[in-house]
Each structure stands twice: as C-alpha cells, then as structure tokens.
Image (cartoon, rainbow, N blue to C red; front, side, top):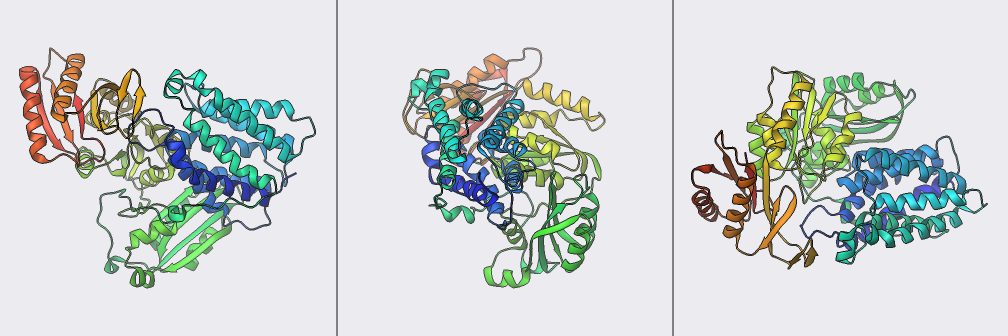
Length: 562
C-alpha cells in the first residue's frame, strides 16, 4: 500500500525527473523545426502540479493528492503532449476516489481509467505515441492486478511494459524508424514514471537540477502597459484556494464581490476547488466572503507597495509571480459579460498581435510554435474578455487541445476554432459578422479559414532526415499548410518559390487574389521590401502582394494566399 505522502512525493519526483531530462526528450522530436518541444511542454505541465503539491500538508490521502495533481495539470497543460499527460492523470485520479491509501490493484485500475480518458479526448488517436505506451502499460497492470503484487512490484512491471512499448514505437510510426528515435511523448511518460518509481521503492525524491523554473522568463500576454507604483490602487495582494463544501458551488457571486472591493481579480474553479486572486484594501472581507463556499487553504496576503519598493517589479508582475504563473504585461482581471461576442487569439510578434487587435480581438495571448501557452493562460484571457460568448483562435496545431480544455472551465460560453496558423486566424476574424448568431458565425469562420493557403519559412534546428529531405542545421525550411515542401538556403528564392506554389493551388480565377507576406523579427525592412518586389514580379497580375511587419520570432516569413 502507498499513502498520500508517498504519492505526493512520487509526483514531485516524477516532475523533477522530466525537468532534468526535458532537453533529451526534446531532442527526440523528428521534425527539426525549432518549436515548443515535447519534453519542455510535459515538464512545464507537471510542474504546475508540483507547485501545488509542495504546499500540501502531511495529513493527506491518495485521493486528495491525485485530485490536486489532476486539477493543476489540467490548468497548466501546454501543447498536445501536456494535455494528454493531464488527461492520463485526470483519469488516474478517478481510480483513487474515496481512497486513503492505494494497493497495487488500485494503481492498475487508476492507470486504466487514465488511458481511457486520454483516448476518448483525442479525435484520431495515433498509435506509436504516448497513448500507445500508456495503454500497453495499463494493459500489463490490469493483467497482473490480482496477482498479489506490492505497489512497488506493480509499479516496476508497469514501467517495464512502458519501456517495451516505447521501444516498439518506431515499428508503428515509420517516421520514427527512419529517424532512428522513439516517440518523444512516450519517452516523457517513461521518464516521469521512472522518477515516481524512486519514491515508490522507498527512496528520496529526485532533486531538480533546474530550479530556474521557479522564476519563469517574462512573457508578454497582453497589450496594456505595465503598472508603476503610482498605479497600485489596492495595497494587498490576496490569494487563497476555496475547497468547495458543495461540488456545485457557483463561484460567480464570489467573483462579483471580489471585483467590487478590488481589481486584478482571477477566479478559476473545477470540481473540487476555487482558486482566487485579488488586489484589495480589505483582504479580511475577501476571506470572509470565500468562507461561505468552503474552507480555505494556501492563503497568502502581501503588501504590494512594500514589495514594489524592494524589488522594482510592477503590480502586474507581482500578481503573476504570486500565482506561480509566468509574468504578463498586465493582469488578466476578470470582467463582466458586457458584449455578446468576444475574441481571444494566440500569437507572437507585436505586428501580428496588432493585426488581430485591429480586427477586433479583445486579448492576445503570447505564444505559438516556440512557446505554447497553458490552458490557464488562455482561460485567464477568456475571463478578461467582456463577452457572453468568446471565440478562441489557437493559430497553432499544438495549442488547440490546450485551448479546448477551457470550454468546461470557463464561466461563459467558449468556442474554439481549430485554426492552425496566423493566416487562418486572420481569415476567421475577417469572416465574423456581429449580426449573426454564434453557430452561424462559427460555421462561416471555419469555411473562411479552410480556404486560406498558408506558408511559412523557418530554419532547421538540427540535422535531420525527414520525408526524403536530407536537412542540415541552419537550412531554410519551406512549409505549406504545416508540411515540409522543400529545403533551401536563399531566403528570397525560397519565398518566391513557396508563394508561387501556394498561389497555384489556391488561385481564384473569378475574384482578385491577395498574397500577404508577414515578415519576422530577423528580417530587415529593406530585405522584406526586396522580397516583396520579387514575389510581385513573379506572380504578376495574378495577385496583389501586401507586406506586413509581423516581428514574429523564429519564422522569417508567414505567407497567406486567398
């Protein structure tokens, strides 16, 4: 049997282990694009749970530990691998409901439920991935559940099965076999399970070799200016977690009250807890109001004026740091639902962000290929959008699943459009009609972004052999619709060739055609203008070529053809 303390420490050990090996897991990604890689996303996801678990007292059960971890993982999920990991542990927590301690059979049942939850959430499960590794491990556990094994013995058998499944992933996915690697998500799962095993076997928690995660790099999430000391209207940053007495307790009344006595209000809830943050001059009143919904834990009250004087940080930065989150330029304070519709988009680069803002997007969350925002990041932006119905534009295939998790967490209606690129997101916004209802708008926006041709040019982060292309580190990668089209070394030649190919496939002979070249932070204005001229010369009168300074990182150009 294992108790709550052991399971808590096992989670922490697993989180530290994936943090220590995240770069090795990142390196297993087959496609050499510099992106928000698997190991990093899984590490950041499970570390969201670690932060909350470390605050738990020792009088805990396996039920409370697993629920706390599942809730934090869900909100902290980043990228598809992080979301799948959160779903595995969310199902895992269901198997430990009502239990103070867990036997080997309980662990087997819990893992089986976790796998079922993950498979159910993925529309088209791909075998040879983390899903396969977890499923075969669960099947082995289920097979041995009645054999009278100890938890440590069961854990070891699960790990052996997971490693065997991981070794077979190249046989299930030819792209892995050709690259000579195993699946990165599957390796991440094994790495976490290995870290947990150390504690299950009676050892000490694996130490983290990278405590820098406790001070995340500053990351812009919004558009407003930072606070200075003169803008601190309310003195006390008040934070606490309400453990619900009634699972159906509605947090909206509490949120409304907190907004009446302060600002920078964030209220996020799930089945078990309500996580609250407010800047106020009356922290006692905030606590008294919260006590009506349940008992409080993780209470923290700080004097921001005093902290600001010592650290030089803005109130917005303090709010984010106190919540254990990455630092925004402004706090996502929850707002009233004033309008019928609102929009949240994910994008990187000041120019790209401004494009979305000009088209009516309320809040832009910084992120994209190199930086996948968490579910909580997107949820906070939704709650800061003054609308009854909020459309979310992820604009990247690796952010869609994290965005979709907000649907059941938000306090308002949310619609997630599966936009996979910046051009698709822009096309969706152009198709919005405020006189139409939400369903009609959803359909029209989908039709609009599905017609757009999208291209992009970035660089190879490492040597690779991918889909018949021998790729050397630093070469230019020309992408069409997210798939590698060709490799080159001359930027102007690459853009002209890629744009011509996109236009040929998306040419509309009846109406005018538009090509938008969005150039990134590593391209000078002069070079961009020269490339625009070359593209216009190539396409002639078939299309009008427009140049936009996007300032996006990593991608030299993002191209839209419509």
